[in-house]
Image (cartoon, rainbow, N blue to C red; front, side):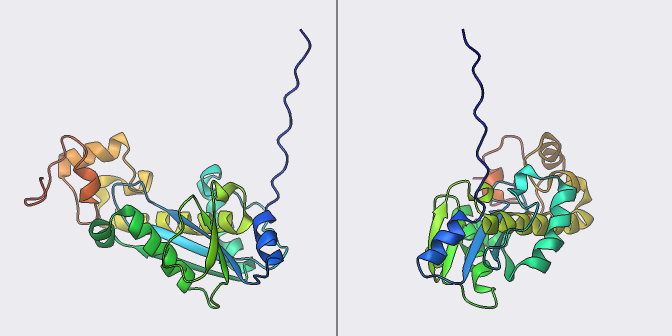
Length: 220
């Protein structure tokens, strides 16, 4: 049998989607991503980033592929080098009243609305377009690993949310938010079973998990 060589993965063209939008006539293009859809506690965050034309911010990648230290360092770099950026959130009450998908749309819409200049086109990570975004756009599956502006937005949203969860840790140290940032780790679940939920927990998520005492009126 002959030797089979693994094909090298071609390098990512980080500005392909931004360049395509410019060629279609759009000049202000933002990348949008969220952080915190899955956790059991805390808000969902979103960020929108507009890059200078033909500019890649060195080191930017899908936030999940970067260490916490690297994300923190890149946060400041992105804020300095981006043409514009905005970070927003939807809180736990909004997640509970709307559902997590609609709350994510709300956070994304707020992030886009917070830009200094309204964008003409938005690149959205994932496969669903927020319905009230206010501009044209395109969804990009796994966009945080394909588009520089989406990747930059993923880092801003992730770091901003992590920092917020550290503030919540000061108020609710018994849950260990400084370590898991609200995700459903064994440590977090054990703390929930021991202490019950706090006001910043998403009760609609917790109802699906056995053994967690629910506040009166929320047991169903």
